[in-house]
Image (cartoon, rainbow, N blue to C red):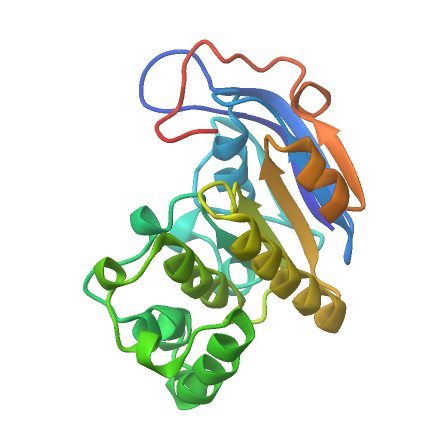
Length: 230
């Protein structure tokens, strides 16, 4: 299970962006989290991905309460979760080629030996050709870069995926292609998925169930908008 338990979260100043949010995701389940822009759902997605420390509450991954955040979290918990963000250019190191970007999690966790083969497998799965893999982010389109970011999220074979507005900046064909990649991975591995967005039609078609933000965080406020929050 991936459990978000009574999370209240925010940033350095002002009111919390998220108040008392709770959500449970079962293994193999896909859940859509629907909410308007500015409600705090991107902040909650970052908490779920162990990238943002909440003010109170916490996250439980496969029965283990998370004792830290970012690199303070145990590696076994960090690598259990793959995340794809809304804006690929903000989440990709501009100095890396797409090949290096995809392989980045493998190299960071000491699995260099399998990096080349895994990168080739994933690049083919997301539809990136060999000539694109040698390019840097500024040399490719948003859709091509997001394909690489999806491949990077799958590199460590995570048991849980958090997709935060993954397709918001993409055209219809690229959206369909990347949703298909995620679903193929889930069929093969039984991974659970939390898909965050504001497109009810997409979430209803993609996910087993869709929950509205008000159901997850009844005490939330949109009064303070988080940076790049959705």
